[in-house]
Image (cartoon, rainbow, N blue to C red; front, side, top):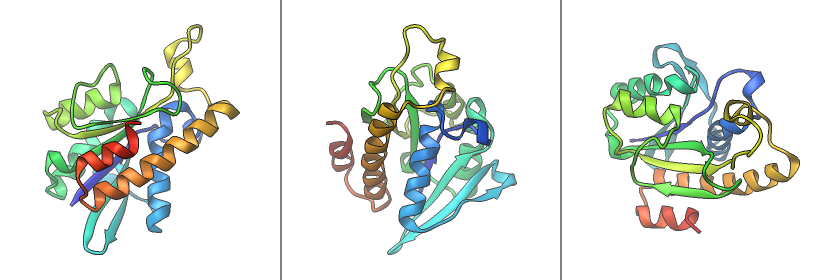
Length: 187
């Protein structure tokens, strides 16, 4: 079984912000499989279950706010006995141009508080990541920027990035080779 995590913050005020691009992507994955998210308070997140020709996955949107995402990820991984190598996290990345996507097999949090929390709770950095670039502003403070909304032009780039991410997540769920997943993204 796979665990696919989209990072973001709960609540309508954060719905279309740059920091919620992980939620936006995982919502599109769920649409593609025609599954709905349901709140599971014990898991501290919104969960949808995918069964695609015998390939199973849990889709997770942590409801803990970004800085505590690891609480939900570790709870779901423990409950469903999901191995670290079967976890993939979709998150925003300030260091990538808007709409650029990168696949990583593992690595540090790189300053991302959601990833820091996941690293701490899983006691590992060995889960996969799909990073969606949101760029950064030279004049807007980081907190204000990530909690700001995409411009119309950025939204076009983000929608294109999310299409690539959905294709890659489908490959991950179907247990395709990681080099194929990376080839969808790292171009």
